[in-house]
Length: 503
Ligand SMILES: [Zn+2]
Image (cartoon, rainbow, N blue to C red; front, top):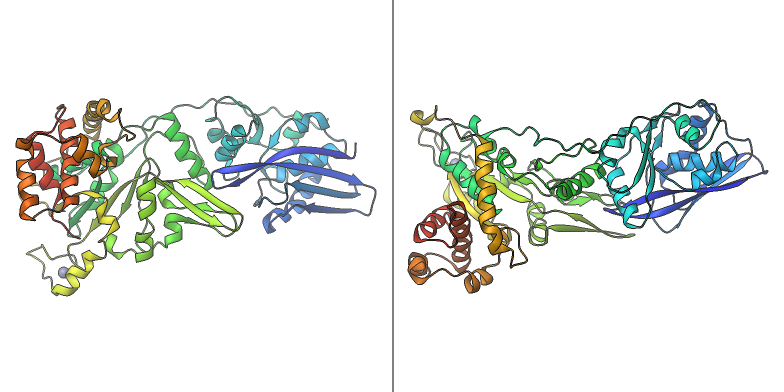
């Protein structure tokens, strides 16, 4: 047989295209040609495949080998095609069975000694191929953990080229494949606990409110007041991810080169303020790559020293905050990545950070001070429901330990349960997602409950947006108290948590 084919997968965003990998061996002068829009790293595949086969006792024939990847119009990148190319060529040369190779989709990079190496994007490749109706996959053993998360497919995982060849009927010595393990549900993982935070019970209480309603939050406070410790513990009180959410998050991680077992702990991502808009939102040359906001999907995005972020990076958050997804356009098309995250921002009260600290001497002058926080103004602040002052812990409270995260998480789960029946009649899952107009129309508490809020609106001390924020927060506070509708005390507390209007 001089002609053979198998399948591979080309990813674009989280979607993909099934690729036919066809090998033809003719009696022309020895050569190895790859056609069908391969990029540079893919072109090197010919060298890797030739060496890997030779070093595995499966030397390729000294004739003309042509491998065609189709459809040619789909961009293909990287080394994940090595295994498919090698199997198509070995089948065409008669070393393995053509019918067997044809039945499987192959993913994997080859080392020069024939070792099969893990690659990025295996989980989204399998999900996308399954969507297209393809169900039989051979993957590197290194990617087995993420691959096992996909239900309803047939999966084989191997460590070496010779094992794959033996599986397809080659006579080279057979080594048994690594045992397949089914997806083991990871425990919640290890997130740091709020009991490590001292003297900030009021702020931790606000984090419980944020976790319950999914509210975005801004913390203002001097350096050293513990803003980062408080933020990075938010995942520890969020409900565990559902299996579907865990797979979504792991698929994005896989594209970014993070492989491992699937975790049900919501992710926490804290980009540095020097991060470019493309590292935050996503980028890549011809093939789009997800950014940190997509790695924070179903979890928390923390922007420490938020006013220091570049303006384009902050601006770029606007669309994903509204839609929960991000689109990246390239010549070959538009890729979509999920990006539904809870935003936590922290900022100093002034450029030097010590405006509120009587012990330190802040010399920031007024225009610079207000300019500093106004970098955050506009669309970003519109999305923030909770705005808090985080004070340095006074001596008297420095030994007061915070509550255990596991206890707080139970409160959050119970409170979400209270809100669930109300939200079930809407398109939204969390209170933070409910638009103001809907709140005022359908969820309006009685006039007596709203008296203080209506009064503030009449006096002009609160804007319409601020009014809506208070209503949203009041529902979350009511859920935490097990109450169907907010009471006046919930409105009062909501007005406090909303904080001062910054912009
Ligand atoms: Zn200052």
